[in-house]
Length: 167
Image 1 (tube, rainbow, N blue to C red):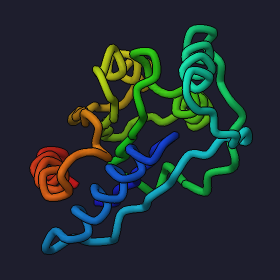
Image 2 (spheres, rainbow, N blue to C red):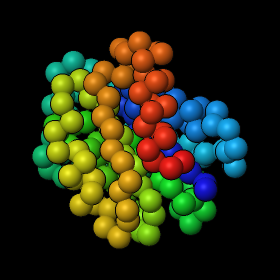
Image 3 (cartoon, rainbow, N blue to C red):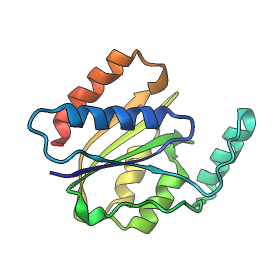
Image 4 (tube, one colour):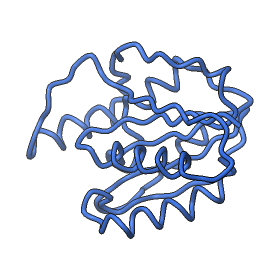
């Protein structure tokens, strides 16, 4: 089974989780081809901080903005399982992931979802399921402050989850 791990990360938490998922899948015995790891990047790469970050991010969610993305060299037809990751913004998936899903038109895939947050997952998984009709959602997991977790605890949590997604 070929696996693609596709994620958006604003401050690095989702990137840490995605890379740990990739390493965990690669470490499995009898694993076929290594998973593909793809980071969604926006054309606007300005980093906002403090209140401006929350105002900007929240307004993108509230006004359903779909930011322009840099090209992502992934052929969805080449993968059986797609792992999608996002930070939680105002209880929703980051607009960059929504923009990617709008363009990618993923269908007929097994999908595993993860999110990283600092206070609650909100309705992230409900919203992602609604954006992924025609797919089978095999599992969901959220990480509270993944970047602040003990690395061995994070690795263990991901290891247990990877067993459930059939990667």
